[in-house]
Image (cartoon, rainbow, N blue to C red):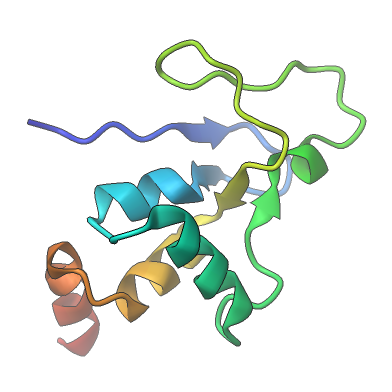
Length: 105
């Protein structure tokens, strides 16, 4: 059993962009939306997480679709890889223990 995450590639400024709530849900965080919001309020997450609409700017491309074929909402928060790790390292979900152990080692 694997976990599927939508990852956007091809942005001129960022190699990989992750849907923040999907990452939080996959990590087993209790309320993914709240976890993302709370992370963005911390000093480690301050200003982090970009809204999909802001990332697309005036680009003529259409909004990306998720694995079910639904368009992602304009207010979807996207994290770069370092923001994903920062959120997971500060969480207390049992599924993130291995990530925290790697940081200590």
